[in-house]
Amino acid sequence: MIEALLRRLRHRVDLSDEEETAIRSSFSETRELRADSLVVRQGQPLDESLLLLLGWVARSKGMADGRRHLSILHVAGDFVDLHGYTLQRLDHDLITLSDSKVAVAPHKAIAELTARFPRVGCLYWYLTNVDAAMHREWSSALGTCSAIERMAQLFCELLARLEAVGLADSNCFEFPLTQVEVGELLGLTPVHVNRTLQELRRRGLIEVEARRACLLDVQGLQTLARFKGDYLYQERSRS
Amino acid sequence: MIEALLRRLRHRVDLSDEEETAIRSSFSETRELRADSLVVRQGQPLDESLLLLLGWVARSKGMADGRRHLSILHVAGDFVDLHGYTLQRLDHDLITLSDSKVAVAPHKAIAELTARFPRVGCLYWYLTNVDAAMHREWSSALGTCSAIERMAQLFCELLARLEAVGLADSNCFEFPLTQVEVGELLGLTPVHVNRTLQELRRRGLIEVEARRACLLDVQGLQTLARFKGDYLYQERSRS
DNA sequence: CGAAGCATTGAAGTGCGTCAACAATCGTGG
DNA sequence: CCACGATTGTTGACGCACTTCAATGCTTCG
Image 1 (cartoon, rainbow over the protein chains, first blue to last red):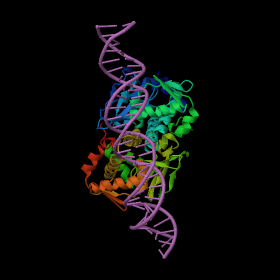
Image 2: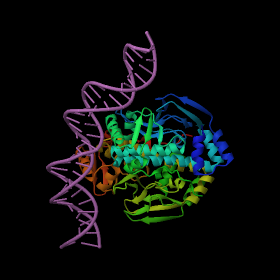
Image 3: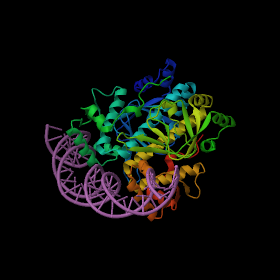
Image 4: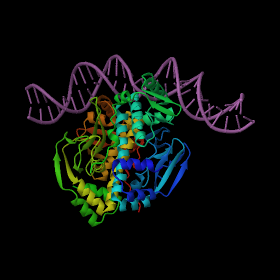
Protein backbone atom coordinates (compact mmCIF):
# COMPACT_ATOMS: atom_id res chain seq x y z
CA MET A 1 0.00 0.00 0.00
CA ILE A 2 2.72 2.45 -0.93
CA GLU A 3 0.10 3.23 -3.58
CA ALA A 4 -1.46 5.97 -1.50
CA LEU A 5 1.77 7.97 -1.54
CA LEU A 6 2.39 7.32 -5.23
CA ARG A 7 -1.15 8.39 -5.97
CA ARG A 8 -0.55 11.72 -4.26
CA LEU A 9 2.79 12.25 -5.99
CA ARG A 10 1.45 11.29 -9.43
CA HIS A 11 -1.38 13.72 -8.90
CA ARG A 12 1.19 16.48 -8.39
CA VAL A 13 3.58 15.56 -11.25
CA ASP A 14 4.19 12.77 -13.75
CA LEU A 15 6.55 10.13 -12.42
CA SER A 16 8.75 8.12 -14.75
CA ASP A 17 8.85 4.35 -14.29
CA GLU A 18 12.42 4.65 -13.07
CA GLU A 19 11.47 7.22 -10.46
CA GLU A 20 8.57 5.13 -9.26
CA THR A 21 10.72 2.02 -9.01
CA ALA A 22 13.40 3.93 -7.15
CA ILE A 23 10.86 5.28 -4.68
CA ARG A 24 9.46 1.82 -4.06
CA SER A 25 12.87 0.30 -3.48
CA SER A 26 13.93 3.05 -1.08
CA PHE A 27 11.77 1.38 1.57
CA SER A 28 13.52 -1.39 3.45
CA GLU A 29 10.71 -3.03 5.38
CA THR A 30 7.27 -2.56 6.90
CA ARG A 31 6.24 -2.54 10.56
CA GLU A 32 2.94 -3.12 12.34
CA LEU A 33 2.12 -0.89 15.29
CA ARG A 34 -0.49 -1.17 18.03
CA ALA A 35 -2.88 1.66 18.81
CA ASP A 36 -1.63 4.18 21.39
CA SER A 37 1.98 3.27 21.02
CA LEU A 38 4.94 5.63 20.86
CA VAL A 39 6.45 5.45 17.38
CA VAL A 40 9.19 8.06 17.71
CA ARG A 41 10.15 9.90 20.85
CA GLN A 42 10.92 13.62 20.95
CA GLY A 43 14.66 14.26 20.66
CA GLN A 44 15.55 10.72 19.63
CA PRO A 45 18.32 10.63 16.96
CA LEU A 46 16.83 9.49 13.67
CA ASP A 47 18.24 7.57 10.75
CA GLU A 48 15.02 6.56 9.03
CA SER A 49 11.66 8.04 8.09
CA LEU A 50 8.28 6.36 8.15
CA LEU A 51 5.55 6.29 5.55
CA LEU A 52 2.14 5.56 7.00
CA LEU A 53 0.45 2.76 5.06
CA LEU A 54 -2.54 2.09 7.26
CA GLY A 55 -4.08 3.60 10.38
CA TRP A 56 -3.81 6.96 12.09
CA VAL A 57 -0.74 8.65 13.58
CA ALA A 58 -0.40 12.02 15.29
CA ARG A 59 2.41 14.38 16.13
CA SER A 60 2.11 15.03 19.83
CA LYS A 61 3.77 17.78 21.84
CA GLY A 62 3.99 17.16 25.56
CA MET A 63 3.28 20.42 27.37
CA ALA A 64 5.33 19.78 30.52
CA ASP A 65 2.32 20.40 32.76
CA GLY A 66 0.99 17.01 31.70
CA ARG A 67 -1.32 18.28 29.01
CA ARG A 68 -0.44 17.58 25.42
CA HIS A 69 -1.27 18.94 22.00
CA LEU A 70 -1.71 16.99 18.79
CA SER A 71 -0.27 19.27 16.14
CA ILE A 72 -1.24 17.21 13.12
CA LEU A 73 -3.06 14.05 12.13
CA HIS A 74 -1.61 11.63 9.61
CA VAL A 75 -3.42 9.13 7.43
CA ALA A 76 -2.35 6.53 4.88
CA GLY A 77 -0.03 7.98 2.27
CA ASP A 78 1.56 10.52 4.63
CA PHE A 79 5.22 10.52 5.55
CA VAL A 80 4.92 11.02 9.30
CA ASP A 81 8.49 12.17 9.93
CA LEU A 82 10.06 13.02 6.62
CA HIS A 83 11.15 16.30 8.19
CA GLY A 84 13.34 14.18 10.47
CA TYR A 85 15.53 13.56 7.42
CA THR A 86 16.91 17.10 7.55
CA LEU A 87 16.25 17.85 11.22
CA GLN A 88 17.84 14.62 12.51
CA ARG A 89 15.56 14.59 15.54
CA LEU A 90 12.00 15.71 16.23
CA ASP A 91 10.61 18.35 18.56
CA HIS A 92 7.55 16.16 19.20
CA ASP A 93 6.50 12.57 19.74
CA LEU A 94 4.87 10.43 17.10
CA ILE A 95 2.05 8.26 18.41
CA THR A 96 -0.44 5.87 16.85
CA LEU A 97 -4.13 6.61 17.37
CA SER A 98 -5.16 3.26 15.90
CA ASP A 99 -3.50 0.02 14.87
CA SER A 100 -1.19 1.05 12.06
CA LYS A 101 1.31 -0.08 9.51
CA VAL A 102 4.32 1.86 8.28
CA ALA A 103 7.02 1.43 5.63
CA VAL A 104 10.57 2.31 6.62
CA ALA A 105 12.81 4.53 4.47
CA PRO A 106 16.39 4.68 5.80
CA HIS A 107 17.79 8.18 5.51
CA LYS A 108 20.66 6.75 3.53
CA ALA A 109 18.17 5.47 0.97
CA ILE A 110 16.43 8.85 0.85
CA ALA A 111 19.78 10.54 0.27
CA GLU A 112 20.55 8.23 -2.64
CA LEU A 113 17.05 8.53 -4.05
CA THR A 114 17.02 12.33 -4.01
CA ALA A 115 20.59 12.59 -5.31
CA ARG A 116 19.77 10.34 -8.25
CA PHE A 117 16.35 11.88 -8.90
CA PRO A 118 16.37 15.58 -7.97
CA ARG A 119 12.74 15.84 -9.03
CA VAL A 120 11.83 13.30 -6.37
CA GLY A 121 13.87 15.30 -3.88
CA CYS A 122 11.82 18.33 -4.80
CA LEU A 123 8.61 16.33 -4.36
CA TYR A 124 9.66 15.14 -0.91
CA TRP A 125 10.58 18.70 -0.03
CA TYR A 126 7.12 19.70 -1.24
CA LEU A 127 5.53 17.09 1.04
CA THR A 128 7.18 18.58 4.13
CA ASN A 129 6.17 22.03 3.00
CA VAL A 130 2.55 20.92 2.81
CA ASP A 131 2.86 19.67 6.39
CA ALA A 132 4.20 23.11 7.26
CA ALA A 133 1.23 24.74 5.55
CA MET A 134 -1.13 22.59 7.63
CA HIS A 135 0.63 23.65 10.81
CA ARG A 136 0.39 27.25 9.69
CA GLU A 137 -3.30 26.92 8.93
CA TRP A 138 -4.01 25.38 12.32
CA SER A 139 -2.03 27.95 14.21
CA SER A 140 -4.22 30.57 12.55
CA ALA A 141 -7.36 28.58 13.27
CA LEU A 142 -6.41 28.13 16.94
CA GLY A 143 -5.53 31.80 17.15
CA THR A 144 -8.69 33.19 15.63
CA CYS A 145 -11.55 30.70 15.27
CA SER A 146 -14.24 29.53 17.68
CA ALA A 147 -14.59 25.92 18.80
CA ILE A 148 -17.33 25.08 16.35
CA GLU A 149 -15.47 26.65 13.42
CA ARG A 150 -12.32 24.71 14.23
CA MET A 151 -14.22 21.47 14.50
CA ALA A 152 -15.95 22.08 11.18
CA GLN A 153 -12.56 22.79 9.63
CA LEU A 154 -11.13 19.58 11.02
CA PHE A 155 -13.73 17.48 9.27
CA CYS A 156 -13.51 19.49 6.04
CA GLU A 157 -9.75 18.99 5.95
CA LEU A 158 -9.95 15.31 6.71
CA LEU A 159 -12.52 14.76 4.00
CA ALA A 160 -10.31 16.49 1.42
CA ARG A 161 -7.22 14.59 2.46
CA LEU A 162 -8.89 11.21 2.70
CA GLU A 163 -10.59 11.64 -0.66
CA ALA A 164 -7.16 12.24 -2.18
CA VAL A 165 -6.05 8.76 -1.14
CA GLY A 166 -9.37 7.03 -1.72
CA LEU A 167 -10.30 6.58 1.92
CA ALA A 168 -13.53 8.55 1.89
CA ASP A 169 -16.80 7.23 0.55
CA SER A 170 -19.67 9.61 -0.19
CA ASN A 171 -18.53 12.10 2.45
CA CYS A 172 -17.99 9.40 5.09
CA PHE A 173 -14.79 7.98 6.50
CA GLU A 174 -13.38 5.97 9.37
CA PHE A 175 -12.69 8.23 12.33
CA PRO A 176 -11.07 6.42 15.26
CA LEU A 177 -10.34 9.41 17.49
CA THR A 178 -11.87 9.78 20.93
CA GLN A 179 -13.35 13.09 22.01
CA VAL A 180 -10.38 13.55 24.32
CA GLU A 181 -8.05 13.30 21.32
CA VAL A 182 -10.16 15.70 19.27
CA GLY A 183 -9.83 18.08 22.18
CA GLU A 184 -6.06 17.71 22.16
CA LEU A 185 -6.08 18.56 18.47
CA LEU A 186 -8.37 21.57 18.65
CA GLY A 187 -7.19 22.94 21.97
CA LEU A 188 -10.48 22.22 23.73
CA THR A 189 -11.55 20.28 26.79
CA PRO A 190 -13.31 16.96 26.21
CA VAL A 191 -16.44 18.44 27.73
CA HIS A 192 -16.53 21.24 25.24
CA VAL A 193 -15.73 18.89 22.35
CA ASN A 194 -18.78 16.92 23.31
CA ARG A 195 -21.04 19.96 23.36
CA THR A 196 -19.63 21.31 20.11
CA LEU A 197 -20.15 17.98 18.34
CA GLN A 198 -23.73 17.98 19.54
CA GLU A 199 -24.22 21.44 18.14
CA LEU A 200 -22.88 20.33 14.73
CA ARG A 201 -25.20 17.35 14.86
CA ARG A 202 -28.15 19.52 15.89
CA ARG A 203 -27.51 21.75 12.88
CA GLY A 204 -27.60 18.69 10.63
CA LEU A 205 -24.03 19.17 9.44
CA ILE A 206 -22.38 16.00 10.60
CA GLU A 207 -22.88 12.59 12.15
CA VAL A 208 -20.08 11.08 14.24
CA GLU A 209 -20.79 7.65 15.58
CA ALA A 210 -18.66 4.82 16.88
CA ARG A 211 -15.58 5.05 14.74
CA ARG A 212 -17.01 6.70 11.70
CA ALA A 213 -17.76 10.25 10.59
CA CYS A 214 -20.30 11.33 7.97
CA LEU A 215 -20.45 14.88 6.66
CA LEU A 216 -24.12 15.41 5.95
CA ASP A 217 -23.75 18.95 4.60
CA VAL A 218 -20.28 19.54 3.23
CA GLN A 219 -21.22 22.92 1.84
CA GLY A 220 -22.58 24.03 5.18
CA LEU A 221 -19.50 22.82 7.02
CA GLN A 222 -17.17 24.58 4.61
CA THR A 223 -19.09 27.82 4.99
CA LEU A 224 -19.03 27.54 8.77
CA ALA A 225 -15.29 26.80 8.77
CA ARG A 226 -14.59 29.25 5.93
CA PHE A 227 -12.75 26.30 4.47
CA LYS A 228 -10.89 26.57 1.21
CA GLY A 229 -8.49 23.69 0.76
CA ASP A 230 -5.82 25.91 -0.75
CA TYR A 231 -3.39 25.20 2.07
CA LEU A 232 -3.36 21.51 1.14
CA TYR A 233 -1.73 22.21 -2.23
CA GLN A 234 -3.53 19.35 -3.92
CA GLU A 235 -3.38 20.94 -7.36
CA ARG A 236 -1.09 19.77 -10.10
CA SER A 237 2.35 21.33 -10.37
CA ARG A 238 2.83 23.72 -13.26
CA SER A 239 5.80 22.96 -15.48
CA MET B 1 24.26 41.40 4.48
CA ILE B 2 23.76 37.88 3.16
CA GLU B 3 26.11 37.23 6.06
CA ALA B 4 23.25 36.60 8.47
CA LEU B 5 22.08 33.62 6.40
CA LEU B 6 25.61 32.31 5.89
CA ARG B 7 26.23 32.61 9.62
CA ARG B 8 23.21 30.45 10.34
CA LEU B 9 24.18 27.89 7.72
CA ARG B 10 27.80 27.72 8.83
CA HIS B 11 26.65 27.22 12.35
CA ARG B 12 24.74 24.15 11.20
CA VAL B 13 27.41 22.65 8.89
CA ASP B 14 30.76 23.56 7.37
CA LEU B 15 30.41 25.23 4.00
CA SER B 16 33.09 24.92 1.35
CA ASP B 17 34.25 28.08 -0.40
CA GLU B 18 32.63 26.83 -3.57
CA GLU B 19 29.31 26.31 -1.84
CA GLU B 20 29.45 29.73 -0.25
CA THR B 21 30.28 31.40 -3.53
CA ALA B 22 27.50 29.54 -5.28
CA ILE B 23 24.99 30.58 -2.61
CA ARG B 24 26.06 34.21 -2.92
CA SER B 25 25.79 34.23 -6.69
CA SER B 26 22.35 32.62 -6.66
CA PHE B 27 20.91 36.01 -5.66
CA SER B 28 20.19 38.27 -8.58
CA GLU B 29 19.45 41.60 -6.92
CA THR B 30 18.28 43.33 -3.76
CA ARG B 31 15.10 45.31 -3.13
CA GLU B 32 14.12 47.92 -0.58
CA LEU B 33 10.62 47.77 0.85
CA ARG B 34 8.56 50.25 2.83
CA ALA B 35 6.95 49.34 6.15
CA ASP B 36 3.43 47.90 5.89
CA SER B 37 3.73 46.94 2.27
CA LEU B 38 2.55 43.75 0.65
CA VAL B 39 5.59 41.76 -0.50
CA VAL B 40 3.88 38.65 -1.86
CA ARG B 41 0.16 38.12 -2.21
CA GLN B 42 -1.58 34.88 -1.31
CA GLY B 43 -2.00 32.68 -4.37
CA GLN B 44 0.30 34.68 -6.63
CA PRO B 45 2.43 32.45 -8.92
CA LEU B 46 6.04 32.58 -7.79
CA ASP B 47 9.32 32.27 -9.62
CA GLU B 48 11.66 33.69 -7.01
CA SER B 49 12.25 33.51 -3.26
CA LEU B 50 13.28 36.30 -0.95
CA LEU B 51 15.98 36.41 1.70
CA LEU B 52 15.36 39.06 4.32
CA LEU B 53 18.48 41.18 4.80
CA LEU B 54 17.12 43.90 7.02
CA GLY B 55 13.86 44.66 8.80
CA TRP B 56 10.86 42.63 9.85
CA VAL B 57 8.47 40.61 7.67
CA ALA B 58 5.47 38.50 8.68
CA ARG B 59 3.40 35.79 7.07
CA SER B 60 -0.17 36.98 7.30
CA LYS B 61 -3.32 34.95 6.82
CA GLY B 62 -6.44 36.94 6.03
CA MET B 63 -9.36 35.40 7.90
CA ALA B 64 -12.18 36.41 5.52
CA ASP B 65 -14.12 38.13 8.33
CA GLY B 66 -11.59 40.92 8.14
CA ARG B 67 -9.41 39.74 11.00
CA ARG B 68 -5.98 38.41 10.21
CA HIS B 69 -3.39 36.22 11.84
CA LEU B 70 0.38 36.59 11.66
CA SER B 71 1.64 33.02 11.58
CA ILE B 72 5.34 33.77 11.84
CA LEU B 73 7.76 36.66 12.19
CA HIS B 74 10.89 36.90 10.06
CA VAL B 75 14.11 38.72 10.82
CA ALA B 76 17.38 39.26 8.96
CA GLY B 77 18.85 35.99 7.71
CA ASP B 78 15.47 34.32 7.17
CA PHE B 79 14.22 33.19 3.81
CA VAL B 80 10.68 34.51 3.96
CA ASP B 81 9.23 32.35 1.20
CA LEU B 82 11.67 29.59 0.42
CA HIS B 83 8.75 27.18 0.72
CA GLY B 84 7.35 28.92 -2.34
CA TYR B 85 10.08 27.19 -4.32
CA THR B 86 8.32 23.84 -4.06
CA LEU B 87 4.77 25.09 -3.46
CA GLN B 88 4.80 27.56 -6.40
CA ARG B 89 2.33 29.84 -4.61
CA LEU B 90 1.65 30.75 -0.99
CA ASP B 91 -1.39 30.21 1.20
CA HIS B 92 -0.70 33.52 2.95
CA ASP B 93 0.46 37.06 2.31
CA LEU B 94 3.92 38.33 3.09
CA ILE B 95 3.97 41.83 4.58
CA THR B 96 6.65 44.11 5.93
CA LEU B 97 6.32 45.31 9.52
CA SER B 98 9.15 47.80 9.12
CA ASP B 99 11.27 49.23 6.33
CA SER B 100 13.09 46.22 4.95
CA LYS B 101 15.58 44.99 2.42
CA VAL B 102 15.52 41.60 0.67
CA ALA B 103 17.76 39.69 -1.72
CA VAL B 104 16.10 37.91 -4.62
CA ALA B 105 16.83 34.28 -5.49
CA PRO B 106 15.19 33.23 -8.78
CA HIS B 107 13.82 29.72 -8.52
CA LYS B 108 15.88 28.79 -11.52
CA ALA B 109 19.00 29.78 -9.61
CA ILE B 110 17.88 27.75 -6.59
CA ALA B 111 17.30 24.74 -8.83
CA GLU B 112 20.80 25.01 -10.27
CA LEU B 113 22.36 25.64 -6.87
CA THR B 114 20.74 22.64 -5.23
CA ALA B 115 21.39 20.38 -8.20
CA ARG B 116 25.06 21.24 -8.18
CA PHE B 117 25.39 21.17 -4.38
CA PRO B 118 22.98 18.61 -2.89
CA ARG B 119 24.24 19.49 0.59
CA VAL B 120 23.02 23.05 0.08
CA GLY B 121 19.72 21.65 -1.11
CA CYS B 122 19.50 19.70 2.12
CA LEU B 123 20.31 22.86 4.11
CA TYR B 124 17.60 24.83 2.33
CA TRP B 125 15.17 21.97 2.97
CA TYR B 126 16.25 22.12 6.61
CA LEU B 127 15.48 25.85 6.73
CA THR B 128 11.89 25.29 5.61
CA ASN B 129 11.56 22.47 8.12
CA VAL B 130 12.63 24.81 10.90
CA ASP B 131 9.89 27.20 9.78
CA ALA B 132 7.50 24.27 9.97
CA ALA B 133 8.70 23.50 13.50
CA MET B 134 7.99 27.07 14.52
CA HIS B 135 4.48 26.86 13.10
CA ARG B 136 4.01 23.60 14.97
CA GLU B 137 5.25 25.10 18.20
CA TRP B 138 2.94 28.07 17.90
CA SER B 139 -0.08 25.98 17.05
CA SER B 140 0.57 24.13 20.30
CA ALA B 141 1.12 27.33 22.20
CA LEU B 142 -2.09 28.87 20.85
CA GLY B 143 -3.93 25.65 21.61
CA THR B 144 -2.80 25.23 25.18
CA CYS B 145 -1.10 28.27 26.72
CA SER B 146 -2.46 31.37 28.43
CA ALA B 147 -1.92 34.87 27.10
CA ILE B 148 0.98 35.65 29.42
CA GLU B 149 2.73 32.37 28.66
CA ARG B 150 2.46 32.94 24.93
CA MET B 151 3.78 36.44 25.22
CA ALA B 152 6.71 35.27 27.31
CA GLN B 153 7.42 32.60 24.71
CA LEU B 154 7.36 35.16 21.92
CA PHE B 155 10.12 37.19 23.51
CA CYS B 156 12.16 34.11 24.44
CA GLU B 157 12.02 32.88 20.87
CA LEU B 158 12.90 36.25 19.39
CA LEU B 159 15.89 36.61 21.70
CA ALA B 160 17.21 33.19 20.70
CA ARG B 161 16.72 33.85 16.99
CA LEU B 162 18.14 37.36 17.04
CA GLU B 163 21.17 36.29 19.03
CA ALA B 164 21.87 33.71 16.33
CA VAL B 165 22.26 36.46 13.77
CA GLY B 166 23.91 39.01 16.04
CA LEU B 167 20.93 41.33 16.38
CA ALA B 168 20.51 41.11 20.15
CA ASP B 169 22.63 42.99 22.61
CA SER B 170 22.62 41.99 26.28
CA ASN B 171 19.06 40.62 26.08
CA CYS B 172 17.77 43.68 24.23
CA PHE B 173 16.73 44.08 20.62
CA GLU B 174 14.83 46.30 18.23
CA PHE B 175 11.14 45.46 18.32
CA PRO B 176 9.08 47.49 15.85
CA LEU B 177 5.71 45.72 16.31
CA THR B 178 2.64 47.55 17.53
CA GLN B 179 0.45 45.98 20.18
CA VAL B 180 -2.16 45.33 17.52
CA GLU B 181 0.38 43.28 15.58
CA VAL B 182 1.45 41.37 18.68
CA GLY B 183 -2.21 40.57 19.16
CA GLU B 184 -2.47 39.28 15.61
CA LEU B 185 0.50 37.03 16.30
CA LEU B 186 -0.66 35.67 19.64
CA GLY B 187 -4.35 35.48 18.89
CA LEU B 188 -5.28 38.20 21.40
CA THR B 189 -7.11 41.50 21.29
CA PRO B 190 -4.97 44.65 21.46
CA VAL B 191 -6.59 45.45 24.79
CA HIS B 192 -5.49 42.18 26.29
CA VAL B 193 -2.01 42.49 24.79
CA ASN B 194 -1.68 45.78 26.60
CA ARG B 195 -2.74 44.32 29.94
CA THR B 196 -0.56 41.26 29.54
CA LEU B 197 2.48 43.37 28.71
CA GLN B 198 1.82 45.41 31.81
CA GLU B 199 1.70 42.26 33.88
CA LEU B 200 5.07 41.12 32.48
CA ARG B 201 6.48 44.55 33.26
CA ARG B 202 4.99 44.49 36.76
CA ARG B 203 6.70 41.17 37.40
CA GLY B 204 10.01 42.67 36.36
CA LEU B 205 10.44 40.28 33.46
CA ILE B 206 10.54 42.63 30.51
CA GLU B 207 10.62 46.21 29.37
CA VAL B 208 9.04 47.12 26.02
CA GLU B 209 9.34 50.72 25.04
CA ALA B 210 9.11 52.65 21.82
CA ARG B 211 10.61 50.26 19.32
CA ARG B 212 12.84 48.22 21.58
CA ALA B 213 12.44 45.24 23.92
CA CYS B 214 14.64 44.33 26.88
CA LEU B 215 14.34 41.01 28.64
CA LEU B 216 15.19 41.83 32.23
CA ASP B 217 14.87 38.28 33.55
CA VAL B 218 15.44 35.73 30.79
CA GLN B 219 15.40 32.82 33.20
CA GLY B 220 12.07 33.94 34.64
CA LEU B 221 10.57 34.41 31.19
CA GLN B 222 11.74 30.97 30.06
CA THR B 223 10.26 29.36 33.13
CA LEU B 224 6.97 31.17 32.63
CA ALA B 225 6.85 30.18 28.95
CA ARG B 226 8.27 26.70 29.60
CA PHE B 227 10.61 27.67 26.82
CA LYS B 228 13.23 25.30 25.54
CA GLY B 229 14.57 26.36 22.20
CA ASP B 230 14.68 22.81 20.88
CA TYR B 231 12.17 23.57 18.14
CA LEU B 232 14.54 26.12 16.60
CA TYR B 233 17.10 23.43 15.73
CA GLN B 234 20.02 25.75 16.26
CA GLU B 235 22.44 22.96 17.12
CA ARG B 236 25.14 21.75 14.79
CA SER B 237 24.31 18.93 12.39
CA ARG B 238 25.85 15.59 13.22
CA SER B 239 27.89 14.03 10.44
C1' DC C 1 -1.41 72.79 14.85
C1' DG C 2 -4.39 69.30 13.69
C1' DA C 3 -5.11 64.58 12.35
C1' DA C 4 -4.05 59.89 12.58
C1' DG C 5 -2.19 56.17 14.76
C1' DC C 6 -1.07 53.98 19.01
C1' DA C 7 -1.34 53.03 24.03
C1' DT C 8 -4.11 52.85 28.12
C1' DT C 9 -8.04 52.28 31.18
C1' DG C 10 -12.78 50.86 32.87
C1' DA C 11 -17.05 48.23 32.81
C1' DA C 12 -19.68 44.55 31.32
C1' DG C 13 -20.40 40.24 28.61
C1' DT C 14 -19.33 35.42 27.04
C1' DG C 15 -17.10 31.26 25.31
C1' DC C 16 -14.93 27.91 27.14
C1' DG C 17 -12.81 25.69 31.32
C1' DT C 18 -13.35 23.28 35.68
C1' DC C 19 -15.43 20.22 38.78
C1' DA C 20 -18.35 16.53 39.64
C1' DA C 21 -21.36 13.26 38.74
C1' DC C 22 -23.50 9.55 35.95
C1' DA C 23 -24.49 6.71 31.70
C1' DA C 24 -23.14 3.97 27.93
C1' DT C 25 -20.02 1.06 25.66
C1' DC C 26 -16.37 -2.17 25.23
C1' DG C 27 -13.06 -5.69 26.06
C1' DT C 28 -11.85 -9.49 28.93
C1' DG C 29 -12.03 -13.42 31.79
C1' DG C 30 -14.70 -16.60 34.42
C1' DC D 1 -23.07 -16.02 28.05
C1' DC D 2 -22.88 -13.01 31.64
C1' DA D 3 -20.11 -10.18 35.03
C1' DC D 4 -16.90 -6.92 35.61
C1' DG D 5 -13.89 -2.97 35.40
C1' DA D 6 -12.11 0.40 32.34
C1' DT D 7 -12.63 3.56 28.92
C1' DT D 8 -15.49 6.83 26.63
C1' DG D 9 -19.39 9.80 26.26
C1' DT D 10 -22.92 12.97 28.42
C1' DT D 11 -24.92 16.41 31.46
C1' DG D 12 -25.29 20.38 34.90
C1' DA D 13 -23.58 24.19 37.78
C1' DC D 14 -20.32 27.55 38.31
C1' DG D 15 -16.05 30.37 37.48
C1' DC D 16 -12.69 32.89 34.90
C1' DA D 17 -9.64 34.43 31.09
C1' DC D 18 -10.30 36.91 27.55
C1' DT D 19 -13.41 39.78 24.57
C1' DT D 20 -16.17 43.72 23.49
C1' DC D 21 -17.41 48.36 23.67
C1' DA D 22 -16.27 52.90 24.65
C1' DA D 23 -13.66 56.60 26.03
C1' DT D 24 -9.31 59.24 26.83
C1' DG D 25 -4.49 60.43 26.56
C1' DC D 26 -0.17 60.20 24.20
C1' DT D 27 2.81 60.35 20.22
C1' DT D 28 4.27 61.35 15.73
C1' DC D 29 4.34 63.74 11.56
C1' DG D 30 2.83 66.37 7.54
